[in-house]
Length: 365
Picture 1 (cartoon, rainbow, N blue to C red):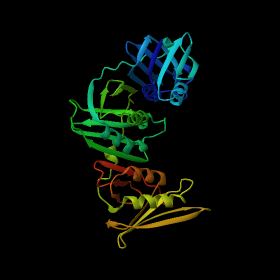
Picture 2: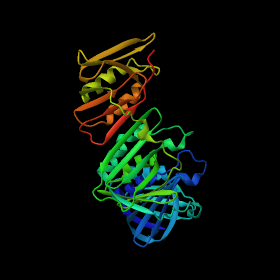
Picture 3: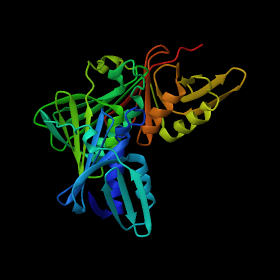
Picture 4: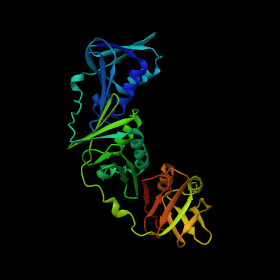
């Protein structure tokens, strides 16, 4: 196999495929990228057996063939090269990578041992706007669980119901929901739980205006530009998230988003060893006071002006979870609906339509 290609295009292909490289696998083949030269293009693939990525790009093919090159090393080599044509030639178990005066030789593995790329025949398809997709992922990804003992929570529920495009994630301590409106609704409803990591990677990779998503019995495929991204779907029943949202309104406070975000950061400096941040709401003073106390370290408090509707109330939240919700909210103001110290608090941003962030309280000592 021998081909030449522009350094930038090769780096784009390697970077895209590298999103699926396995970091922990004991199989050496999974730390490599499969490069196939055929006709007038090359196809670069990588997989960790849960995520598979394929990127196709035009190249000058001198001789066809395929080989598995070390993924991270090859990407690092190409990244270090000047912006010029790169020639890759594979003979037996070695690949020669040259560009201008630079030359590298790396060991290769047989392409016959590389896992076959999943062939997905989607039952349902939908076209998503990239901006809407990345916005939804950004709003909910922090709430995806990292606890592998409950696999269903390591994914986000992606639902397309008529014109509504919704993502939901929860780690059982918080719940994030974000909804958008589709320009072109799918022919049929789609509801699938997608691994959180896969959604984040698609959001990073997609540069085109639209993303086509297809769902089959076991897999979800995202197609955009020159890239095809396939991930397994997570089987199981996603929690009934609507039941978690309080039905009755409690005390509602509206506060400047930037001000409370900065106050939460300052107070969190004293919220060490999982110490929560307390939120005390005063109706008479129209204020909300954030505070934290860590034994043998110190304490901090910060009072902010707020618009308060309802009774005085005090509640405590995990400071990291509170900061995550404030970080993804958009707009000038944010509202909190708090009914009691023992019930979840609900955060919304009036200008961030379709966004809801629910926080389970930490018991006040």
